[in-house]
Amino acid sequence: MNHKQSSRLLGALLLGLGLCAAAQAAPAADATPMRKSIELPVSTRVFPGDSAGAKAANSYCLMCHSYGMVETQPTLSKAAWLVEVGKMKNAFKAPIPQDQVQVIADYIAQLKGAH
Figure 1 (cartoon, rainbow, N blue to C red):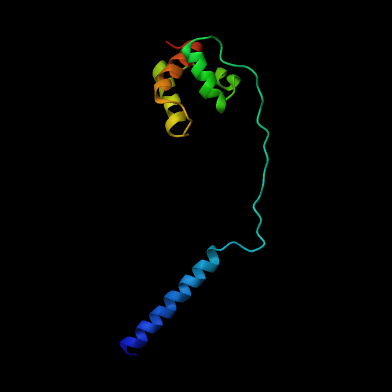
Figure 2 (figure 1 turned 180 degrees about the vertical axis):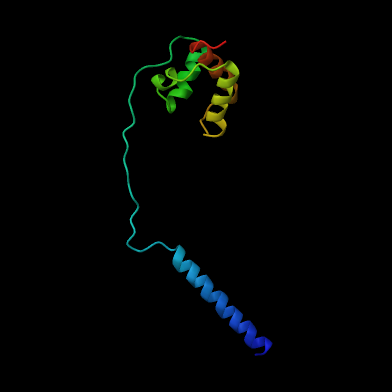
């Protein structure tokens, strides 16, 4: 086998592998996406008070969490709440303005009785 024949054979093999991989990656024509529906709990409870912390918690925490869910969390230190609120902003992409992270953490720590 000469160089030209080797190149053609290699090209045919690579083409065959590419077609095979594409066929495996392509979804079946009759595949339909599975649809699920969930019902989110509804609550009218809000964080108590008229402080900046209460307003921030009501504005940003209640987007995803109920007051009751936060209320049942363990008592954490202010530093631990700062980590938790930071995680909501940074890891879970909650739209909390950076200047409100400390405000919310301090408020929830105070609400939960942390020192």
